[in-house]
Amino acid sequence: MAKLHYALLLLVSLISRSDAGIKTLRLTSNPHPIVFLDKFAFTHFGRVTISVSDVSATSSLLRPNPSRLGFFLLSEEVEIQAVLEVGQNPNFCILDSRYIVALDTFCDLSPPPHSFFNRTYRVTYPSGYSLFFANCNPVARVSMKIHTELYNLDFGGSKNYLSSGQSRLIPLFFEFTLAYFFLLVLWAYYCYCNKESTNRVHHLITGLITAKTLSLICAALDKYFVKLTGLPHGWEILFEVARVMSALIITALIIIGFSFFKKFLPEKEAKVWIVPIALQVLSNLAFPFAVMMGATWPSVVLGLALLDMICTCTILVTAGRSIWLLKEAAKTDEKAAMRLAKIKKFALVYVLAIGYLYVMPMVALALRIFMAHKYEWVSNAAEEGAILTIYVVALRMFRPVGDYTILDAQDEKEETMAVANEESEV
Image (cartoon, rainbow, N blue to C red; front, side, top):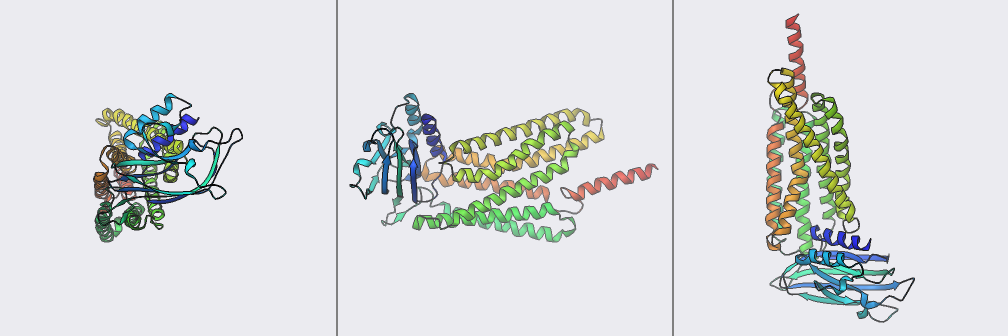
């Protein structure tokens, strides 16, 4: 179990991102062999400040060895090697690894009863590092208050609490905010000019663009305050709220679309789709909170990501099978052709939603992993640019124009045509 905890935390630290340069954490009777504290990308002028107070270590067996309790930095360039090193020996202490940058241990604490230390360390090799606390005493439980500050020194000597390369994200997010605001104004004007064709879907899309615009504003202000003070001052909470709102609106659009298109699906496929869509709704609600608690729930984060992947594959495979079966029938059967067109349309809507929710963030994550930290803003620019393209395509598809809308008007048009045909036959 300890080896699994080591591996999961090291892997989660590889994909996690630093949200603030200053953090405070309190451990109470913590038995875990390793605790992930923070992640940061340093320049040649990096600094790490660690303050520890109210320290106590207890064990039901032997007295804990203070040299086996300590802090260390681990470069992301060697995290995989560290995972393999831990996995090869179940009794191995990560503090003995040749891949880590060892900091203070409990041997450096001041004498009790007020055990504490406060140290600042230089980081001269630029890279992305994860800060950990390790407890290599079996069954020992540690309690303490930890205050960390991770920052780079700018040329003027001022502290910059943003990771290397993230300062460019502030103007980037403001630029995309203006782009989405322009898109929102254009969409609102288009809906106003076509009031007769506007329905609940278009109102949801308006809310979606608004939530996306607000999330970018919050992201920009979050980075701005973290750079100056090391703390986001609550903007990260507003950002997560806006992101959850976006996910909920997209989920609502998928459910509305499915409820409309399911009558064109074979009965068996419609029943198969209900389960994965319901699971994805629950996953979308839980995933942002699991990511925020990633260091505590690493297996939950990975489990939700795997669940989303399975649900997506299930829906896409069944949709592809239905399209393939209807292609031949559509050549001679008008109803089959209509069903084929509807299934293709829903599949396109679903692919756009999946691209927005999962594919773009995963591609951006892959770019961040393999790109140098000073170019991290490029991955964010690519992600936001691709998402903006998805928005433009979706708005082009679902715009309220004359006799066409995605749900009500089209449905009513088809019913009206069917009634007219029956009356003409009579």
